[in-house]
Length: 185
Image 1 (spheres, rainbow, N blue to C red):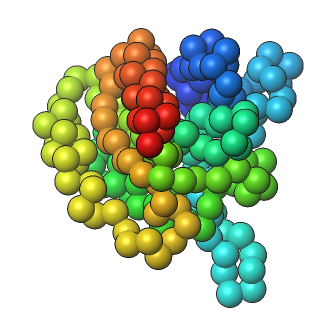
Image 2: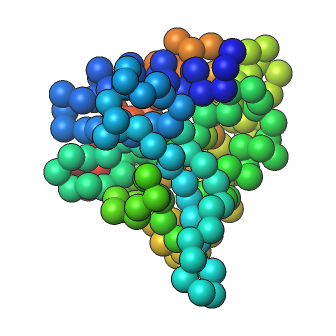
């Protein structure tokens, strides 16, 4: 499978699910001319060096953004070829330690306590399922103190998927839950 194919499939399904509810799905790896240009672009966690230059810490695949508030409700990193714990944890920490999230090089959208970070690993054989559950249960205690802007992210979920359908259904479930929790707070 070509890198990013799974991301694009899932992003398109998420747009169908959440587009009519006031959310935009931003994503990487899509095809120009097929997917909407205003929704396509690189998503990065970044920090600023001592000279104020933005330095990339991690890439993200999908973001769910409220059209009204311009806030990120969900940030999604999909590891299409692995579910190794050190890779998933590296994704989480590189995102949480950042100074913000760039979309198309601009930090116009904001993370907040209602943002959920979803890191999903491909575990077609379910070899890492127990380890993934363990990480998901422990990640809250590892979350950095409010020392970085991205540490405002309210929830972190690490999970695995076995195929595109499983990934799509899990993301829909987690994003619906995120939206519901945000409305309640």
